[in-house]
Image 1 (cartoon, helix red, strand yellow):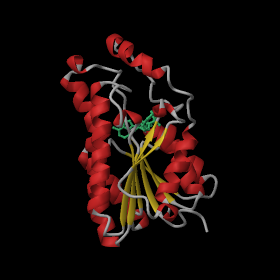
Image 2 (tube, rainbow, N blue to C red):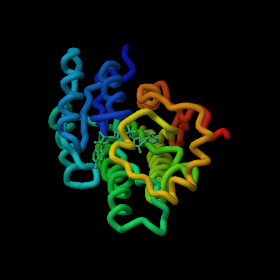
Image 3 (cartoon, helix red, strand yellow):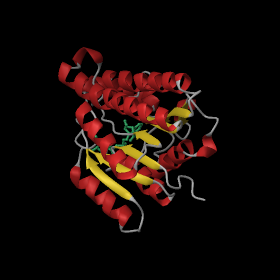
Image 4 (cartoon, protein in one colour):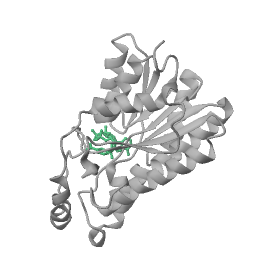
Length: 252
Ligand SMILES: NC(=O)c1ccc[n+]([C@@H]2O[C@H](COP(=O)([O-])OP(=O)(O)OC[C@H]3O[C@@H](n4cnc5c(N)ncnc54)[C@H](O)[C@@H]3O)[C@@H](O)[C@H]2O)c1
């Protein structure tokens, strides 16, 4: 039997990078995947790639920072497939390494909107459904920037730390209800996340020494394999924690 046979899996930010790798892998492992991303072209491409293989996926354009969009995402999942067994909160944005003194309200709200408000909206709806089902799994994609102080700018660092806290709280509080919630903290992964980035000079200078201790870039599929494991029943005793996947970077 495949790892996610007949499970319904919502993946946010599934149009690119790790989310796309997860969508393809989860579908190959038997999941009915709801491919969600703010970029409609990317959504359509990923759904096409999955369905052309005879596997199952449905796409929807979602801005995860808008609660109404997140509601539509869950409504689509329920109307199409009738359950939500797995939620992966993967969509996220960087912050140009902007140090706190220079963070505008616009930047703060944008990063918080995507990286923590969105995952919260999705967790809330997922939990409401999973409580009815008596089971479900949530995987939140944090970052080593959610564990350490200077892997990104102030807003990204704060948002990813908050996501770790949300993960631990949900994992413990709902651990008696058949629900597990974990986070992954990737290191540097070869994706499109730096697309269009313009780095803050002071922030980048301060972060730079830490970048030099990174051992290697990971490929998106390496993180997708971990997400698959956490989403599957094989990880039945892993709950309320953060699994670091950084090739050893934070062991320095
Ligand atoms: N790439 C890295 O080195 C790295 C390291 C640690 C953590 N992460 C985290 O991994 C996750 C995935 O990032 P990635 O590296 O695969 O990046 P990516 O840019 O390749 O993919 C992210 C996807 O999220 C989508 N997205 C952006 N804003 C959105 C919104 N408001 N609503 C819905 N979708 C939105 C984008 O369109 C994109 O398709 C992010 O949460 C990121 O913070 C990345």
